Image (cartoon, rainbow, N blue to C red; front, side):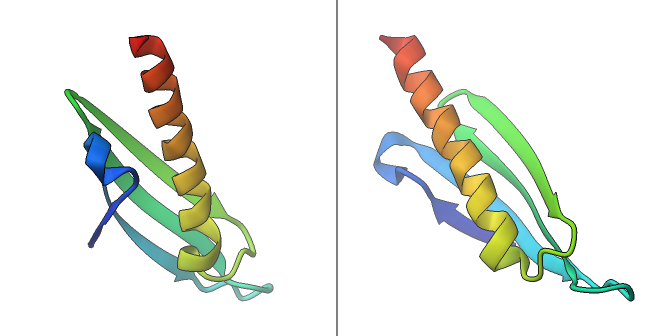
Length: 79
């Protein structure tokens, strides 16, 4: 399990695990499973990219984009 920060100064903490699943028909499937804490809210995400290869290279950046949108949405809603 790892812990990373996206905008840590604003209280967004991400926890998760990356991986790949072997695929006998081609490239491995890339995956990321994670959750985040942002103020009083909790978010979870699963990203699975068929034939994507590495979870850290392919799936985790997709999750980062989703979490970044959550930050932007919450910041706009707070205004």
